[in-house]
Amino acid sequence: SQQLRFRGERVLWLQPASLDQLLELKTQYPNAKMVVGNTEVGIEMKFKNLLYPVILAPAYIPELNTIQHTDEGIVFGASCSLTLLGDVLKAALVKLPSYQTEVFTAVLEQLRWFAGLQIRNVAAIGGNIMTASPISDLNPVFMAAGCKLTLMSKGGERVVVMDEKFFPGYRRTILTPEEVLLCVLIPYTKKGQYFAAYKQSPRREDDISIVTSGMSVTFAEGSTVVKHLALSYGGMAATTVMAKNTASRLLGKQWGEELLQDACSSLAEEMTLHPSAPGGMVTYRRTLTLSLFYKFYLTVQQKLA
Ligand code: FAD
Image 1: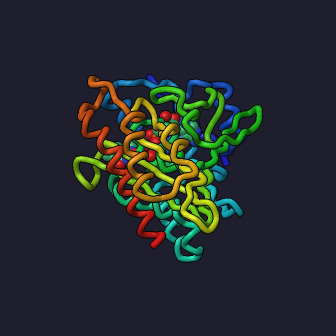
Image 2: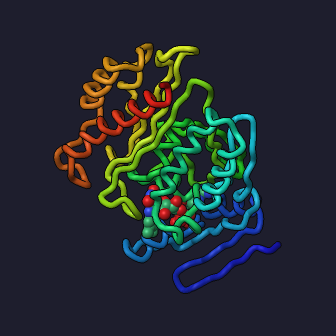
Image 3: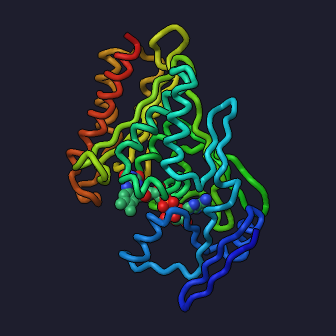
């Protein structure tokens, strides 16, 4: 198939037909803006008056739309729509034992309150990650789950775990200008691992979050002693963040009242916000980091019972 090229007065629109062509163009035009669903870029251009003179549209490249089931989890091409993401995860819930699908259930829970159907039908999984919004609903889930991202340029590919280093600053990622996000691996959970995601927004449906989070706990075999804990929050800083101190403080502790107390005092210390932080509602947002953990605590208690 053929590469398409439209030249307007202000914008050059390039639609590569293959992954090789895309990577070649990204080398040639490192500042070109990739556009898939256009639900972020469209807003930036229409309402924030940003101009991207070169647009790269990779929506139809097969590798960016592929879904693969592997031993570790399900790999989604970066251009897969959120509707497709949801459909594939729902199908997996039916087939797999429930201990493996804790993250999938959490992603589905976030998708349920993510925009409206029209947006979900076109918005891509890669677009949500790469926008690097501090209030993304999916990034805290992907971060707490330790999703693996495959990044690719003409020079080769690398796989990175999505942790707090992935977003080095406000609306920035570690990708180089020549790189594109190829795909995202959403992992299966293991026995003894519990996962949940929460979104608090002013209105339940189709609204921007105030605080959003993804939380994962893994217990030492046959016990309720914390072996691994990951708490990720959106809406608490300029990027999606992890409550690392709190997580490490709770290692080795029993899932019970005392842990809950420790978690709350530690989160209150760690998840601070400057009184003038953008978005306001500073006290409410700080309180939410505790209430969402409390919700997670109860959710896990219930699953253990
Ligand atoms: P695009 O606008 O096409 O691209 C977004 C960014 O990603 C661009 O910078 C682009 O260059 C980059 N990009 C895309 N693909 C790649 C790639 N493969 N490699 C490198 N860079 C890439 N977000 C939420 O989190 N929760 C919500 O509830 C929510 N509700 C919304 C409601 C409305 C009405 C609208 C307009 C937006 C909403 N959003 C929400 C934000 C948005 O829909 C999501 O971030 C969406 O996932 C973006 O995907 P897209 O394909 O439309 O991105």
